[in-house]
Length: 312
Length: 318
Image (cartoon, rainbow over all chains, first blue to last red; front, side):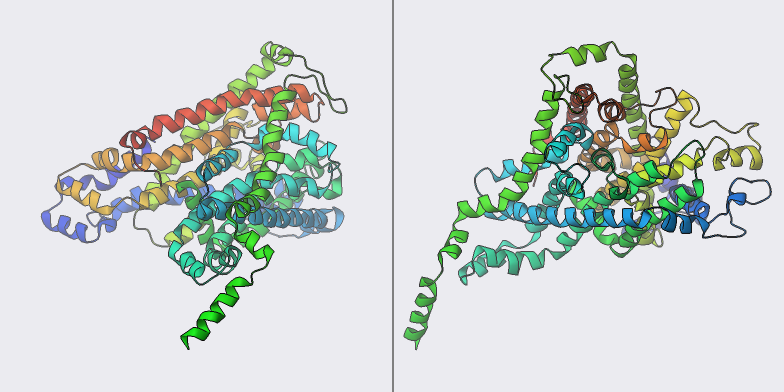
């Protein structure tokens, strides 16, 4: 935290000496910081920003490059430049796709993520509508209770949940995950959707009520179509969270073929003392790609749901 | 003519079936709407929470439901150096990682809040570490921290010549602890930066203009405008960050599994190790329950310490 103000100070310490004209100009376009010289901006803004981007992206670059490197290059930094591949190979990916159950794991993860997302969206839409629009007595407290549910971390719940899952006979089945993931998805989605419903003018619903629409018609024909951006945000976010989930999938799934990708890579591909780094990196890369592609289509929704959920 | 429309209107009104009328009856509608969410959360969240607390006072193992043993699990844990090691590392990990995440995240947010070309692309790139499954990026870090083929060691030893020997990142206790914290900070920066950026963008530029005209320094503008207006959102983001860092499991489990010699166990990984592979469900639950006081304290602290200003001003939280 000490660095941040220092940067700002360095960026703008010229201000004190700035001439009135410059100040006048700056008030026209305050975000331009027009009193800054090019060189100063270079050092205080672009240099740290570049460092941030390089450090944040490097593990992905390293993951991708390792996935396509032949073993000979991977362990020999003196003859080959480690930052580049001289003879790329698909060997690791081939091995992963055809010699392990990777496609199966991918399919299970996809199935669980999609089912859990739809289940939570269904529950959250109804709950958020009831809390925000039906305004019954105590609706605030229900909203608060759902918010508090989001603060209960899975690390506390996995042991009792494992017992429950076992008693319900769901152990080792994808249903165990589909039913438990909503515990952290519903609070998040509900909270996000309450915010979206709040932004829809209440007058629209009143008009519909006067025209004789039923509550169900109002929800399906007026509120939901207007809340589509919110639904997309909540949906893609839930999908990502389910795809990333680890501890429940580790505790509730035993058999190799019904594991999810993150768990399977860690437990099935890591065997013995010699790690298959090529296969591990290929698996991580392929496991990240669906989320990353998904993400690239919906970046703005991610940002809005992230900030929306925090602001609420 | 008006008469005909009026009769048409009344006839339509008289027809609704009992189902429609039931769905327009508000109490029923409220119950139906809340039932799926509240039911699911009660069964899979509230009940397990209670069950977990009960389990902490039993000697349950896998395949045998336990009997009430009172505080025996906790008494045992009190004398267990491994448990205290996990408590120490959980607190240390949370403290250092939170300071790192918020320091760097705030810095990044302030950088992004300036006029930068390709801002939206930059924002998309920066959020990437947070989107990709933690375990998968943790595996990448595991490879980066490899004792023999670490790329960081290669840079320091062969390219820059700063060291003689490769760094043994995960081999000894303290370097393993700090390596894990570095990976956690790496993963946490995007979330903090993007949320704080959203907070920064709500601050009106006219406040800065007024302060500039009054001859304020940059530090004063940060201290008296940016920071106070950012506090409410900072409090919320920090509460979330502390809770999810303290109960972190994936990163440690993926990279070190608590090793070397149990020096990097967090309470969550220790609870997992004792509870699921070890079969001592009661003891695992006791460790998990022991996290609750820390979480409540951290939440109250960050919320009241940071949100005090807003709370004192009596702002409507709407």
